[in-house]
Amino acid sequence: MGKQRLEEIFGLRVLHTKHALKSAEWIYQNPKARADDLMDAFLDPHIKAIISNIGGDDSLSLIPFIDFNIIKNNPKVVMGYSDTTVTHFMCLKAGLTSFYGPSVMTAFAENVAMRLYDK
Image 1: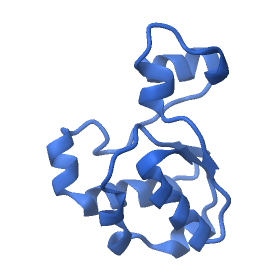
Image 2: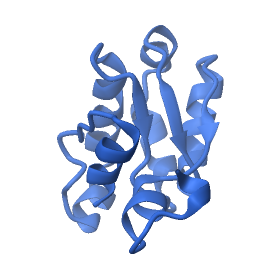
Image 3: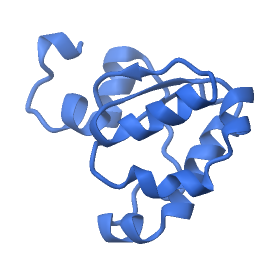
Image 4: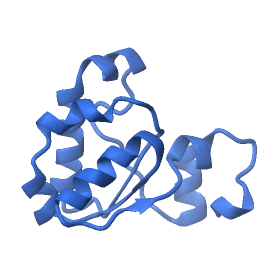
């Protein structure tokens, strides 16, 4: 539903990374794959923005696998909150401004209808 709303309400073309739809357990056990997804998103010239799916408590495990030069040399709009704060730090370290804002699941997918302030 989140993807559908982002496309229909905001007119965005939504892509997901290679591992984004894996199970929570798989994602937790594979921080390098998650970091690779993030680096691939920064490197893809067709991707203009990166919006976090949801928060959590494990993004610190990605830091050893992050290439800050990729972020610096391929600036994108980056948005999310909670665990995504670590991603905001990555952007800051690379000299990129990011946006502390809604994630796909909590703002665009979980509720029966979107809240007015999310539109």
